[in-house]
Image 1 (cartoon, helix red, strand yellow):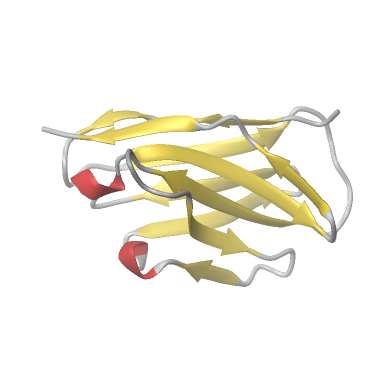
Image 2 (image 1 turned 90 degrees about the vertical axis):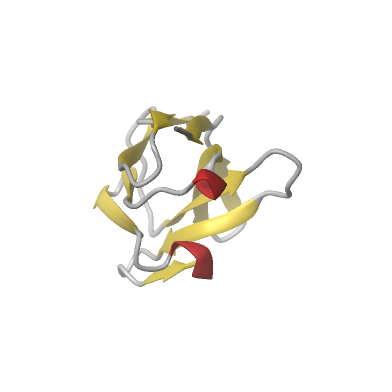
Length: 114
């Protein structure tokens, strides 16, 4: 069973930056699309950013211009988060998807507070 492990979360002040990374526990093969989701307290899980195996990216409106998703290789995905706001506070989850197969990380906490 392949597992995804997120890292890079933590506490940061408003306006600060964090870089999240997600890596598969073992090497995987195939044309996976990758993404980051988040769930804030009292909110439903929402899509933050995606990147297809071809490198096409998409972002939710609230993070456009501040967040950047990238593929480091076939087994890792990162999310660079700049100009962080308190409303970005959430548990962030990474996702790999290929056809009917989906892999989810267990989540990493991001807290933006002064």
